[in-house]
Length: 273
Image (cartoon, rainbow, N blue to C red; front, side):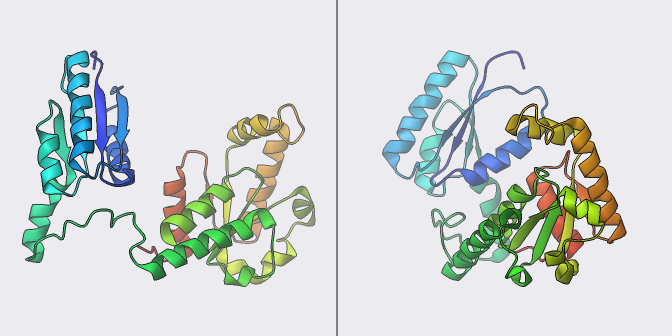
């Protein structure tokens, strides 16, 4: 793609849904390089008309129609957006009519239900799961581990914390994480606080080279960040996982989203909507 192109993502709420969709779609086009403009909370005519003006200006400047991805629910606002000079991809136009036919009922056109609070019980569970992950982060607490749906173990900076938080926010999973240290490796068995919870343990490994890179950003030039130390710790951790029959996965080339699904599948934790 030689010419400059602008991509607009327009939503009447946060824009999280449309951003995720567009990011996924664009992974199929390796050479696409475009400026992305996100316009959330476009929930009235004036806001949409301002976005339409931006789209028209971008069309003039670029010499090509901008791509416009819309998750606007209101039909009038969607119609206004379609009068712009952009190429509009409307996810509700694409799916709602067929879904309405299949369900034999009209859509409600409620704005913001995908990422609003909605069900307060569901929301409270999500908040509780996040609070749990924060309270049991990096072995900060061991009393109460029996309440965890799963416990991630691995060496420092192997991805335990972000994975636990994603599991909590996305799937309401009460995930704790516990760091493995050189003392644990010298003893050659699971740390005592984990022994009663073997059925909920899952290990994270990572390529030593990647771990070295991550640790160097945190503590450059330290023994902790050295490649030799990283290799030693990863080798010892994987040996411990195998000897204790703890399932584990190499997180090096996996996104947090992929890690979360892989872990839940293998541990048997149900995915909550």
